[in-house]
Image (cartoon, rainbow over all chains, first blue to last red; front, top):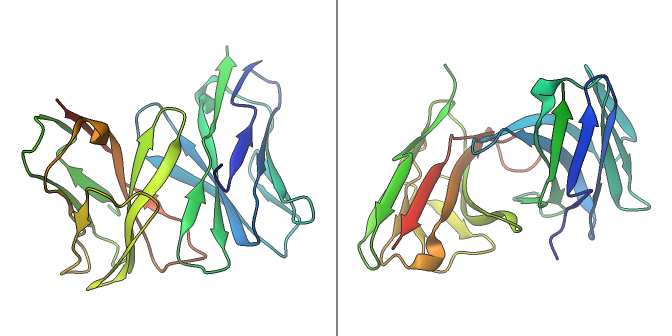
Length: 111
Length: 113
């Protein structure tokens, strides 16, 4: 299976609710990144968390990293319909030359 | 405007007809990469380039070629396309390899009949 695996595969919530997506990985990493993709379009970088960091915030986004469990979570607070998209985690392994993407979580925020 | 461009955006072709998908970035990035995206499989890396004249295989390089003669361009070549190469292709670049965010192009939807 892929290095990064998101959970759940799909998530549907109401506007204003919080959305939490999880990512698990298998090998040691240098950093973990989260990307967003609107339907059929290119990915957009959201946030990067390094292996020596445990939590990071950017606006309504909060990312946590637990290297002992090889997992990360992305929390989107006070979600909006415009947050509807697929969210991918990507890990950079020790070699530092490549990112490996998971299969993504499809988030639907209903107005 | 800083961006990664790809051409064409959509392409329908037939088995065996050589094609090239171009990718260009205007950010003076050293690192460039090609991915394909398929339902249920996420993004898989095809080839990447750490700098001019330096390319390396990703996870799914079979059936593809790349070149990096100039810093800004990283074309993807399909010498003899087959139907299993029908996919959505993305080019991406970053300032350096490793701990850097990647900037993605808009994607090229390729159908091989």
